[in-house]
Image 1 (cartoon, rainbow, N blue to C red):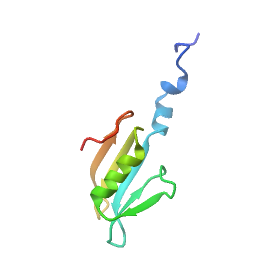
Image 2 (image 1 turned 30 degrees about the vertical axis):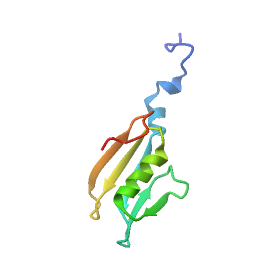
Image 3 (image 1 turned 90 degrees about the horizontal axis):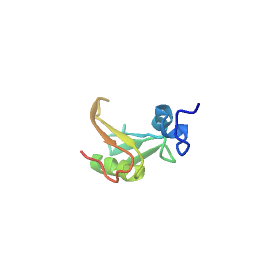
Length: 95
């Protein structure tokens, strides 16, 4: 007996598959000391350097679109200083 309704396939209820669609972005100060790197497998190049931290966070927000995402912001020491989560269907992040 199939416990799911016929109009719902397993991928909609499988937490592992839902997590695999989650885009994770890291915003870190560039090692050169100039600008900030946005790092993610969701980016075609894997990394993008931008001039300001808020610009890097904004880019990650826009790049993720309405897909679920997490943006983790790190300081120069590598410590996590902020996490922004965007649930599916949202077009903006809440601080």
